[in-house]
Length: 280
Image 1 (cartoon, rainbow, N blue to C red):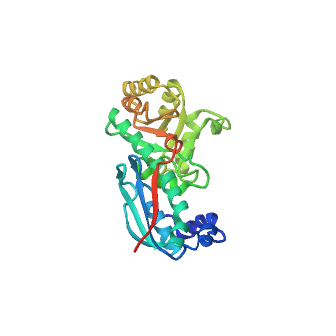
Image 2 (tube, rainbow, N blue to C red):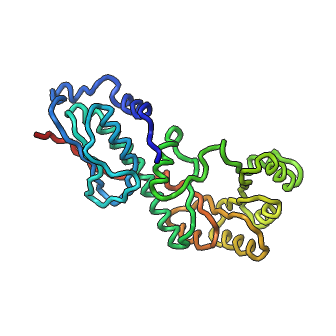
Image 3 (cartoon, rainbow, N blue to C red):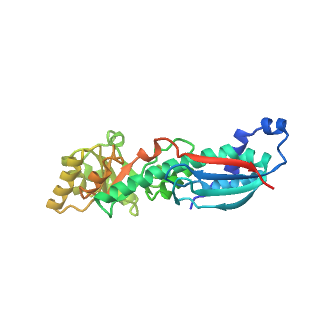
């Protein structure tokens, strides 16, 4: 499981409390013993619970209990309980809460998308793209995994994926650059994005390992799957572009191998009720 390092968490805390908590200090409540609890307001898949608990510890508090990222929660269910002084808990409260809400929103959408897709094909793989908000890659990946999806690409360094924006610079037949790529990176899959049946067939015959069928309608993806079976072409087929909860089952039912989507990153955060109260 991905766990954000203390350095990163301390930076998040410092952004919110750069020079002390004026309200808590002026009220004179900073030393009162207190307890803070987080509860789900709606059904959700929890994420960033480990980071929220650690931010409390870094602020000087103590973790009583928490449920790990990936836990499915019902409304009202307690998933984080911590203790410390009122000053300590207010110090960590809002940053920890907001991180959990945003991460759990992504995790919950990823989970709903996986559930929807597997209604169309129980064996389908759902991968989420690198289109997360810049600066949030680690927590976004953690949330995707917590929701039961997988990561399509971590970035440009570890996968070979050719888009139209690359191919405009290439000359000669497709077989040439595919062969050159395979010779240079024999341990990698050669992946190419396309949006037509004819081109998909040509790329597969040229030796491409994975085809991303970009923004094809469900019927178009089904046609490619059927044609490849007819021709005996062996190639991983992934539907991408416009895949969401509403159509995931239909795309999965086409017989393609994978769904690729960015939709889990966009939407409202999960809703969590946080309560800080005195104890003793």
